[in-house]
Length: 271
Image 1 (cartoon, rainbow, N blue to C red):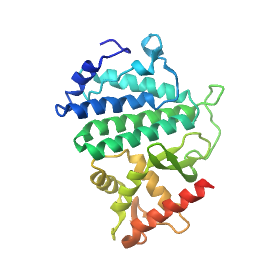
Image 2 (cartoon, helix red, strand yellow; image 1 turned 90 degrees about the vertical axis):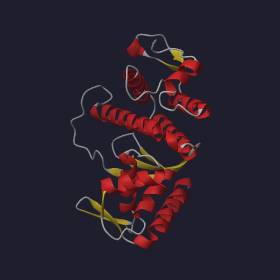
Image 3 (cartoon, rainbow, N blue to C red; image 1 turned 120 degrees about the vertical axis):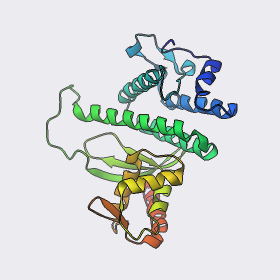
């Protein structure tokens, strides 16, 4: 297969058919959804320097989704090119793009739960891309040299709620890095439902697994961690942490308290 380049709709559909034999409408919607990986980015052209090819306009770029086989490397390398582009943009743009992608995937799952396997694959790769982007930004100074100065690193600076075209997201800001962590509202709500009524401490893996059952797919683990850190950061913490386990302070009212915390932060963020 020619990489990168224009893949006709029929060829894209043939590849997607390996995942989702039926229905055709879902395959086409999934194909369009994958294009959001590029459409969501505020850049005019994609420079595939890795592939020694001329710039390809976004409108003529397609991604083939496959979990295994000879096209698996194609999928991963294409996303690596996307990671390179994200690193070259201002901090707000990749964060907004990722938030839109997560929102689009959540919409797809609500209407087509059978796409969970493919969506989980996309989410895993997006998380990997985001980690790579953060490592590159943290590892080098503007001069290109490694920054060996002591710093607060992963310390959380604060939280805010931001409105996006796909709905509200919880943003976790950190010191000494322009990269924000973002959690969509649906993941937040699902995690809150998991904590509701839990009288015994829960390990993180338990929380993640139960949240996945609520959503119908497994979210990136950092999304659940954002929720837990946010709840711990409240003036009156909504959860207690001990020995890597979490327990709600008011199990019977947890969802209500979590929604109140979100609403309060949203109001503060608008000021």
